[in-house]
Image: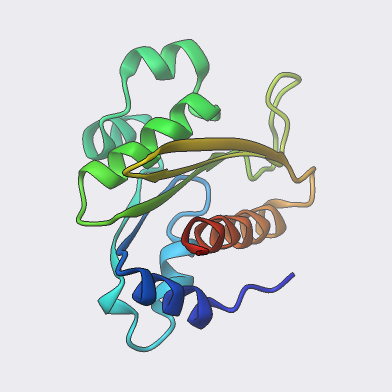
Length: 157
């Protein structure tokens, strides 16, 4: 399912909500999709590309203990990334992505596993999606699209 990003942005306008993104494996693809639409600056506040663990800690406040206990690709880290994006922005809705786009992975964290977080003033929600070993480009595109759908759901009246 293709996301109509202009409609998503219109939902944000109607709700009076600014959006922030916190991205790891997608490297800014969600922020790019949002800002590809002219006029998006009135509802897109900022995007954090936090590819390294140090960036997740420095820019979003992800805990060293969380990273050590669960690893970067975990719902716990996705939750802290989304909450951190909300706290370090003027947004009312933030989405986060952390995953293994490939190639590679492990028995415990396979290629194509992506964890998402969605944060608003009412709390943080997380989920993990197993996209499978589709190849780096396809996993990243699928993660981008899924994050846009999460934003859309978070803005739906």
